[in-house]
Amino acid sequence: MDLDFFNLIFPFLLQGAKVTIILTLLALTFGTVIGLISALMRLSRFRILRGISWFYTWVIRGTPLLVQLFVWYYGFPSIGIELNAFVAGVCALSLCEGAYISEIFRAGILSVDKGQKEAALSLGMTSGQSMKRIVLPQAFKTILPPFSNECITSMKDTALVSTITLVELMRQAQTLDATHFRSMEIYLSAGVMYLLMTSVIMLGIYFLEKKFQLKVQRVKR
Image 1: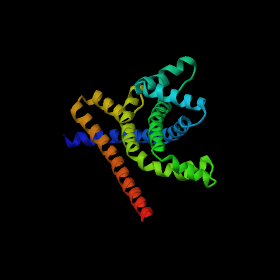
Image 2 (image 1 turned 30 degrees about the vertical axis):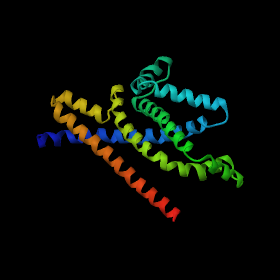
Image 3 (image 1 turned 45 degrees about the vertical axis):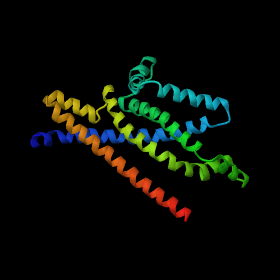
Image 4 (image 1 turned 90 degrees about the vertical axis):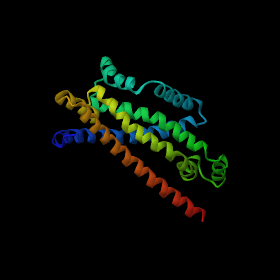
């Protein structure tokens, strides 16, 4: 690649990467909250809560994210609800992440022996206290690996937001290509930036897993 050309396009790609990172962080933050609530609803003894959670995950997981983005950005204005591209993107990504994270949390919680919760209840803890102090800490070990994969998927999924005119990394690359007509260099540069960002996530999760395993070993000793 021509170094001068890379120096020319790098600031634009970097600006797009910043938007990609912000989108990913917001989607994962809101998605984690939504996912935890949905998982607890799915495990609730109340049928109505289980039904709502099931319907939510069924709809979101069963439809393409691209369709969901179009509904938020192009569909809602037709019924009088105007959303800018950023808000529409965050909403669609967050709800999509929430559905998948919900299943991750549910599987993690179910992996904990029921006897643990029963023992906590027998000691006088409420159901909420036993979930917070006993179940979730033990479920974390099971939750972490698939959650890390979901973090990486979330960052890559932000590229779809370029279809609703939000200028993130992929949209910047498309704009640069339309201006300079050097597709290979531009899209390879964008791909390398995605790879670097996902590698940072992988590295962070790796150290988090090591730290958690170390804590577990200390407790066992």
